[in-house]
Image 1 (cartoon, rainbow, N blue to C red):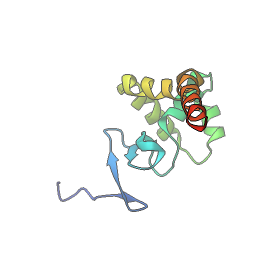
Image 2 (spheres, rainbow, N blue to C red):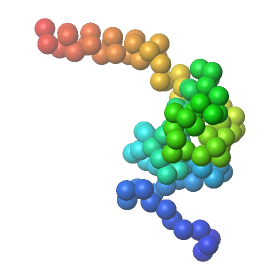
Image 3 (cartoon, rainbow, N blue to C red):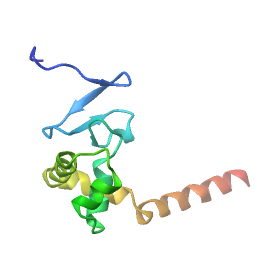
Length: 113
């Protein structure tokens, strides 16, 4: 590791930097999903708002502690990592989880019988 780069930690957990200055990953925070540095807000959350039609200004209104640069960097991260992010977005839907939960509930019910 170059001498001029510090190891940064969040609650004792190492932060994995990305090529985007405002986006990091922290194992054990948001299930390791990319988040905005200095917050627990997932990039996925910003993308969901944007895809639902919120403007940058509306997102900043909803998350007043974020800067415009952070929101734009989240959108940029999405475009640079679209396959990864689309997978995370898909996993955050009812359509993804309903069959898995239904299967689990049936399995639990059978075990109790």
